[in-house]
Image 1 (cartoon, rainbow, N blue to C red):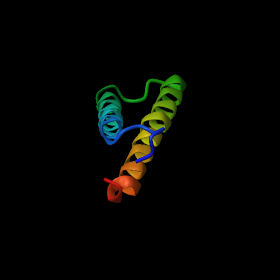
Image 2: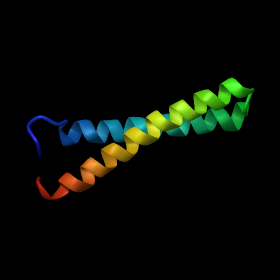
Image 3: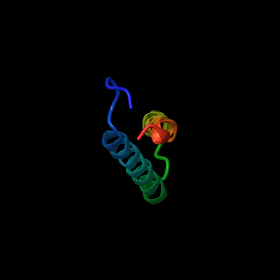
Length: 68
């Protein structure tokens, strides 16, 4: 593990937080639906943030699994 990067514990936290965020966004869409063009923008930005963070954290956990 790099001494400058986040620890594995922090990566697990980021992955879990991102997956919970994506799940909550899915629940909000299922219960409220799309309310207009603003909803599309919010969903795209939230999906990019939570999805990107989840993919990044999962990739870092996968790559660094042999180093521990």
